[in-house]
Structure formats: structure tokens, C-alpha cells
Image 1 (cartoon, each protein chain N blue to C red):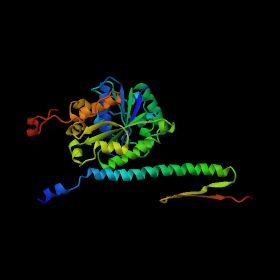
Image 2: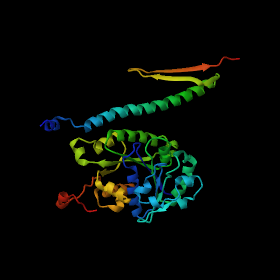
Image 3: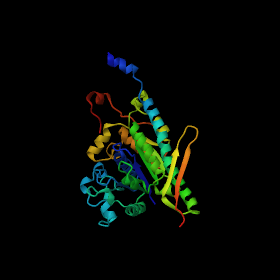
Image 4: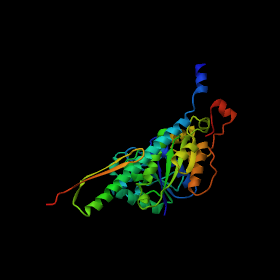
Length: 271
Length: 83
């Protein structure tokens, strides 16, 4: 039986899809079977970040509606053979996502994969609730910025009340993943520090992803940063987070870019 | 020169962000608890009263007024006249 993980945040644009792709790709590279599921019906993007946008035929909605079989809708990654994608529909609206349909799909995926990683849409509406509904664990993606922290707090409250586990009196494991972090600005007191965020949200830390050009580069390429630039600062930070999910204990340090004098002078960087 | 001066006198913004968030979230978390409390209270009170008298469930009013030292819980239920 696989583990169902939701990547959520409340606020949009904080890095849910990037993080889903990067962590999913890292876990799959350890040999475990992983499916990343896009719940953002109508505004799908996980296919694009995974570089599979031209291979989408069927999607989550067509499976729920019985138009396609689950096996027809799953897209296997071309780089990592244990990594799969279940895309969202781009044309239907999110009302097509039914509670029963989602339950059926997730229970089937749970049988097939070690990890089922659900990429939640932004907001606190139906789509976000359905994405978290069956989760065993949650990654709350948070930027060191007031509105993101506030929305994360709201989402944590929903994980404790709207999930199946919560309704059964069980706990959903919750961990915060801080993205777009700038250690120098935090140290100067110009940005909320990781400690500030942890104290305010009072949940454990999964990882700290430093702000980096490599994240944009990875999405430009359609290749998760843990595949395209595993030794870059965000690549290493996401790899550490994935290992912690796997139960390994890894010291929490924030990787930084190693730049030679030549790189600094000429603005180039090893890819 | 003015900019340089500002740089040194400007208060760091992260502590302000932290303080604002702590105050706001304490308030917002209490709101969530309160709405839940009212829903639970409403159901329990209704169930109890309905055991003895006939009531219209949509005519039940529950209000909480928060004071500094004490709060007032007001419950209004319309009871149908017999016959």
C-alpha cells in the first residue's frame, strides 16, 4: 500500500507544482514507484513542468467519467522509469471532479505505487479539499512572506478537519517546505526566518529551498530540478527533503550555489 | 546621502512581519474554534430541548457576545403552541 502525499499551500505561486515535480522525481530515482497527480483542473501545469505536455491524451477527469481507463491516462516519464504522471484536464471545469471519483482513483493508485503525490490547486475551495481528502501526509509549501504564512495556517486547519483521516480521528502528518528562501536576507532581518515560520505555524520542517535561477531553468526545460540539476543548491535541497520523507535523518542546512570566481565575473554557471 | 541615512535608520521588517502574523493568526484561529463551538452547541441544545417540546429547528438563534471579563451566550428558541 502506497503513501498518499498532498502538496498544498492555500496561496498560489509559492511553488507547489515545482515542489511536487522535484520531490516526486527524487523519490522515483531511489527506485520507488511514484505517481504525481495534477488536481488543478482547468489550469493544469504539472505536465508542463514534467516536460510531458505533448504526451497528454487522457486525464484525471476522463478516468473519473469512465471515458478512459486509469492505465491509459498514466504517462510514464522518459527519464526515470518508475516515475508516472496523471495529468488534470485542461478543458473541463473543476465540478467534474467528484468525491466518489477521486476516492476510486486514489485507492487504485495506492495499490499501484509506493508514493501518490497530489499537486493541489491554490485556494481553499473544492479542488483543494479533494486534493487533500485522502492524504496520509501533507507538505505545506510556504514562502517567507506574510500572506503565504497566513494562508498556510489556514490550510493546516483544513488538513485537521476536512480530510478522511481527520474525520476518523487520525492524524495527517504535516510538514512545511519553505521555498524561495534567501538566507542572507533572513539573517539581516529583512525576511522572515525559517525559525520565525516554524514558530508561527508550529509544525515540523521538511526542508528549505533557496531562491535560485535553477528553478526557473528547470521549468523552462520541463525537467524537475532533481533530474536536471541535482547538484545545484535547490536540487540538493529538494533531494534532502525527499530523503527526509523517506525516513532518513539529514542535517538541516541550506545548500548554496558554488560559484567560481570565473562564474562570478562572467555570470555563467555550470548547468 | 539621504538613501544611505535611510539604510541605517530603517527598522528591520522581518520582526514586524512576525509580530503582525502572530497577532493575526491568534485571532483567526480563535474564530475557527468559535464557529465550530456554535455549531456543536446549537445541535446539542436543539436535541435536548426537542426531547421535551416541539420546536422549529430554523427558529433557533444562538449568539455569543464576548466581553473582557465574561461572555454572554444567548439561546433563543421558538416553541410551537400546543394545538
